[in-house]
Structures are given as structure tokens and as C-alpha cells.
Image (cartoon, rainbow, N blue to C red):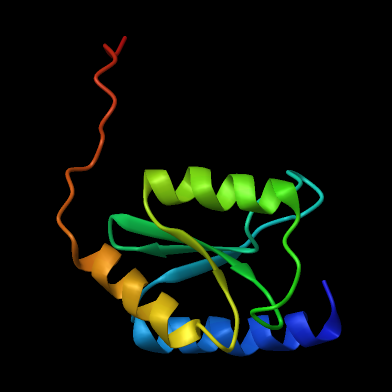
Length: 110
């Protein structure tokens, strides 16, 4: 991650916590799973994954595209940069407001 991306990410985390009061923002370890998005935002019973980029022209690695697509099918995931930040945060707000049913494991308990 470049210094520009690191600086953008720090400010973004603050803007997310301001906008979604009570949320938890986790920074993922890029060395644990290659391509996994940078941030996981937990808000009530919803979540979103975000891959931070310094600009909308920044390159994407194939695994980043893979995980953004996979995680977006599960809940919400997106690349985020200064150019699309407001749109992405608006989409997150819509996702967090939706009332999809939560999947609960029905395994028998011992």
C-alpha cells in the first residue's frame, strides 16, 4: 500500500465511523489472504468490504477483483477512491438499510 493510499484510508475510516455511528471498521491483513479487501465495516447485522485505491485509475490485481465480486454477492463490496467515495458510501447506506434476512446456521447443538 502506498503512502497516498494509507493516508486516504485513515481519513476514510474516520468518515465511515462518523457516517455510520456505532460501526466497527476492521483493517484486514493483506499478507494473510492475498487480494482480500482492505477494510471490513460491521454495522448492526450488516457488513461491507472495501478495497481502497488512491484514484479511480489505480490498477486492480486479479485476486482483488475476484474477492470484491465474491463478497459483493454475499453482502456489499467495492473498490473505493476519492472519486467514487460518496457513491460507495451511499450504496453502503442502502445496503445497511435493507432488510435482507440473516442466514442462521440450523446445525443441531450438542
